[in-house]
Figure: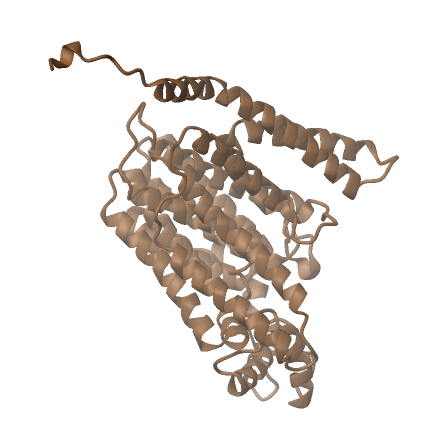
Length: 482
């Protein structure tokens, strides 16, 4: 039979699906906005009900109104919320805690942003997540940490072990890692990378200005900024000041280069106010690396600045550096009190490692063991913190936890090197070198404190990892879903 004479069969189901798809695309934007406003109202109402009581001061009502407007905008425009994350993260310690364990402003931001983004991608039938280079190692590290919590809860060591509190701390750490996956899913193309990178620098500028404005307001004349702790403040400033100086090689105009150099100088000055010696070393190591790779002129200028340090260095900084070693009565050299206590703490931790080299004492379990064991060893004033991330990983999660931590740091550094070699533009190369410098700074500062699981310090580092990994993907074409 002639095909042209065959009766035409109408595809009713296909027509219905096509019509429904067109209608869904037409209302998707409005629906997302409506859903966003409803969720924002419910979330803020819950916060008001749980975190405030009647007859509060007017400034709290203003905060609630501002939060409601910001959250509504975030839910309606997830990309806008993504830019806010690295800006508001340094100021999380200023936000009053919520009565819900594990819930804070960063959690609400991330879940709101990604929830709305997920809704839009699903409605448009577009892929959501992308393959990644760091996810497996992050997952294994969290898995080993979870096993260590079980181990600590079943066989507690020392004064005891609070498995519920440890699980809550691990949840907060996992939330920090989610910034990597969320940004990698949402950031598509160099324009997004530029905007988010500048948002990270905006957070650095804001924190630096706050630190300068507050001055050396902490104990011992040390600046604490919004973070409330001098060494943590210095670590945050060091990581992202390195990013600022690295991006100098990624911009073409002189004004941009001058601005980025000024941001680095501002962050460096804020670190000086913190008097954090470990952070100064971290800043120096990262800056040397990125200037060696990106601009030998800046490296030469850095050398000149260091050589002239006796001229420009303030007296309080000279005193802080001279405290590292003190002359004893017998003309020998002794350490200052803080360094001596840190060495005693590390000696105690080595005893913990001797007893538990494979299994550790459980995630966050070191705080229950150190004071008791220090007393047994005759060491006074042993604190409940390792003051060293490497020793914390080893003593709490055993050799496997330390190995995964080192592998994750190396994986981040390797990602930066691969991206720098394959960079499609000078900006992407500078961004990748900035990640390499930030990872090196993190590795250095981890030798002087517990920085890796700190939400404020590490959150923007994982955002930076995601941006660098996005540069390895093909640039999205206009009008084509990424």
